[in-house]
Image (cartoon, rainbow, N blue to C red):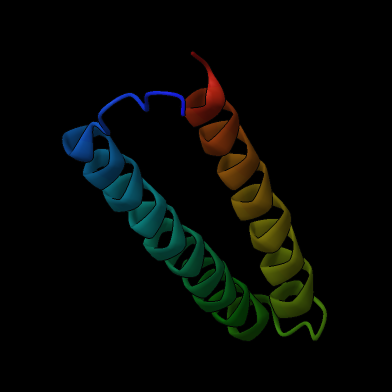
Length: 75
């Protein structure tokens, strides 16, 4: 039987908190991008800005999630 290293529960808790923060950040980025797009649609009387800016916010939030996960995986 091999000996297992004791788990570091504080590191596990820190990682879980960081991942939950990522979800909140992703949701907020997409929501604010949608609000900005809707406001710009009304201001400039266009119909494509809300969709475009929301899509850009989705890509930005995915980029931020990948960047954060990569930094969490570093030893």
